[in-house]
Image 1 (tube, helix red, strand yellow):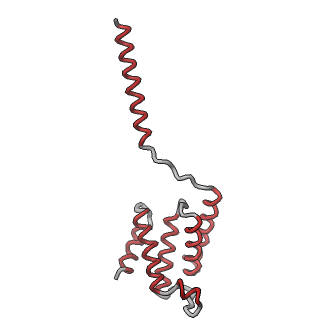
Image 2: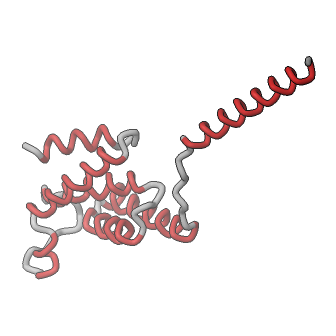
Image 3: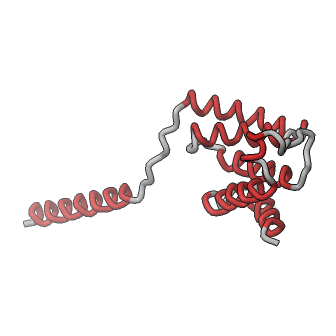
Length: 151
């Protein structure tokens, strides 16, 4: 009788343990499978873009580097940084800032770099940063710039 009782208790505990471990596994979010070669290339582009952005004030080059990387690899692990400098570069170019002038007589520049289009791009990139990456360290600055853009 004691043996049967112990067997039932052991079986109940085993089933309970299995139920707990199975339920814990249901909440596991799959990690993004990142390509190491694409990550390295995107990291290099980010480093170059930061150099353009912060040291050279070459906002046009920064923006082009960002857009190239974003189109090729939107799952980059540091895309929040890229969204920030892409958005800020668009904003600064729309204000006529930076050491790289936009030539609106040039047809390619005229299509892409009018102040209105640059402001739209800045809003889009910074809003994407705020919405998709709310824990990013760039969100506070992005929100401040969005307030300026929405005036």
